[in-house]
Image 1 (cartoon, rainbow, N blue to C red):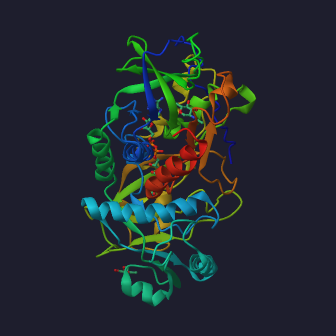
Image 2 (image 1 turned 45 degrees about the vertical axis):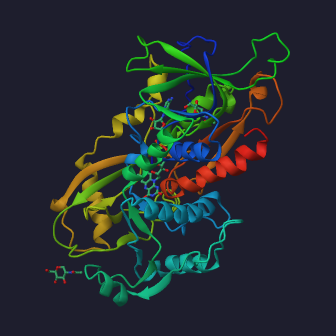
Image 3 (image 1 turned 90 degrees about the vertical axis):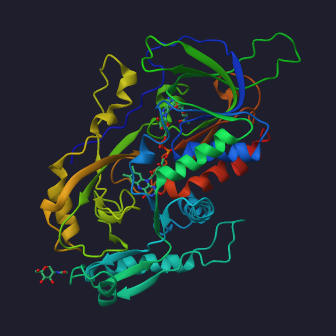
Length: 456
Ligand SMILES: Cc1cc2nc3c(=O)[nH]c(=O)nc-3n(C[C@H](O)[C@H](O)[C@H](O)COP(=O)(O)OP(=O)(O)OC[C@H]3O[C@@H](n4cnc5c(N)ncnc54)[C@H](O)[C@@H]3O)c2cc1C
Ligand SMILES: *[C@@H]1O[C@H](CO)[C@@H](O)[C@H](O)[C@H]1NC(C)=O
Ligand SMILES: *[C@@H]1O[C@H](CO)[C@@H](O)[C@H](O)[C@H]1NC(C)=O
């Protein structure tokens, strides 16, 4: 296997953007209008109706990166270590997600899912089941419904639910809490709440190009206490010609997805920079034999072994979308960053964008993976559909990596003040189940991380 390097690029490494004094002040600045940034901003607007919350997004619409290229599955929360943030926020996020979808008529369906196993894989689903029966609701989130009801069923019972399943399937785990949603309608509902709020706003086609800890420029002692971050943004298509703005943000929430570590790296010395790994996942749409009347999501047991880790990917599964379209995916392929000798180091950070074009080179492998549980699928019926990129913090085979919420303060970077002042909260490695968890991530970040720092 070829070696995969991480990319330790930093924002403004070309030094193209000179420091500018801030012209406006906001209480909360959220970087990124993917599902996570939107959920955080919506929560901030609701909790602090009189404080300004400003979302900046480099694209022209919500959710053009990871949030529009995923499986749109509401996960049950079964896969991750019981004491991880992924489990806690997925369980809570699932509840909040179903509640919001019901209350606002966001298209969704609790389809349930089958994790199917051959005779040799039976212990994998038994372990999942045992884990599910022991899971508790996270602290202060108790609910009357069971945490994660699952049922072990026989191969025949699974085939009575999905007659196309292979005779080799000897057992299955039924997870009734899993579902699907229209993630765009969901994001639009959050966007609408922000726009209709008293003090929330969104700026599109606006990218953050530089961040500095705020050093008070006032000599008056009454104004000398202000801490924060000076965030420089560029609005428009070409950063070479467009003029930039500087905003003083009292708090930053960094929900920039695939660019996550990029901003922070600009502030960190080289040896402390956070490497970024990108793992591509391809989807194929399917029309053809072997799927008559499928109504549940079907997941295989993930491959495990020295170079494949169940935590890296859940295996090429079958999903449905709200239009009844059937797709298979995502597979997993780690990308190698460019050598780093590029003339434009800031373009390097988006090198993954070149890998977004779906191609048919993966269909054969995907077909082999899928026919282990749905034998009558034909490769001719599979069409390359779309590609999503996972923001990984660890290289292939490195085991489990939880979500990371990191808090930095201006004083660490020479901005003065005390720890606790003007936090920058960075969200790193928000891969699956980030969509399911988004409302719980927002609750955690705003109620637990922000409010515990005493700033608000
Ligand atoms: C293949 C795949 C399948 C998945 N399947 C599921 C699933 O079925 N269920 C589930 O729960 N989760 C799933 N996930 C995970 C889920 O999609 C993500 O966790 C979630 O969408 C992450 O949202 P985000 O807001 O963090 O990132 P993004 O949606 O990428 O948002 C980040 C935003 O920040 C913007 N940005 C970046 N840099 C800047 C800058 N400098 N200035 C301004 N804006 C900037 C970007 O343009 C982008 O819009 C999947 C992920 C992948 C890759
Ligand atoms: C697959 O197709 C063959 C031939 O049409 C049929 O005999 C078999 O029952 C099918 N298998 C499944 C699992 O549907
Ligand atoms: C937050 O986002 C900024 C800008 O996208 C990025 O430079 C910074 O590294 C991020 N913060 C962290 C901790 O990664």
